[in-house]
Length: 422
Image 1 (spheres, rainbow, N blue to C red):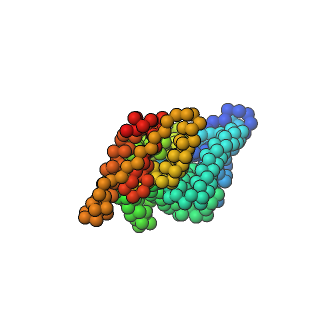
Image 2 (cartoon, one colour):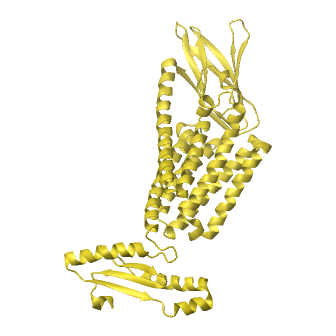
């Protein structure tokens, strides 16, 4: 294994294979990193010349000896002999050389295990897409649409990154296969930021950080528009850095939102922490800091699956928020009239059944109409919010504070007698 990171140089590899047996052996030389632009394979022919096979993801998929997302080179080794084989690598992305020699049985076993793993991963992605799409149709909440867009874009990106999209979706379009990698990464980054803004309500809780998110989204859009102009080689490194900045920013946004009281932020933080861990390993592998292994190559994919599942759990918290919002007054964040009517009826029935006291406080703001007429509705709203804030601070469970209507408030106090209520 050899990882030279991003380089414009061509790399030559010589492989010596010996067969000490008295019968010929049929083996397969496998290159397991599929995103190599140009891969030339050379072996000696029986006539003494050289047999050349030219392939890579810049050529049609039909250029490969075996129809597989990775590069397989079938070799026939004569009895009691040794042969030398040469490969030349060249790519605008990382030069990730990962060769293995397999028998037919070993090749079949490894491919079968990988198909199972990828089937589980993309099966989960499809399930998350179906779930979020159906819920969005039902509730029409933007958070579910943003989540759907992110999972779709990143799931398609993983298809491209693993070479599966080139094999099954556009095998005769190598140019688009390379462009799609960048396009989907841009769209996934933009959608992830949009999902973060909606699920964490950053515009309400952290307006300054919300403006930062909008700025990052603008950078993603500009970079996307520049992709066909600048090309893969000039965009891929800055884009990788931009994605890492966006992920770190989203973790910061999640931490601030959690401190501000956002319930979905807990699962959100765990999700992006998992994604960041996998991303760091993958980026270090691309830049040649860590070697190419199963974990370093697929760490990003494993981290993204954990992240998508945890983000879906933050959407479950969002569902609870939507339920609460239907019973919450948007100006004061107290219970609204619907919650008041429901809780008062429920607590009255419980008080009669348990023979316990129940008190109800009714409050209003004196001279509110005159204050509102003199200073304007905006100042009137501020006065209402000040009173509501005091009620929120001093009303603890099992008590319930609500905005009854206008400048009128109510507090339901189960278990409190007249003295306690006063």
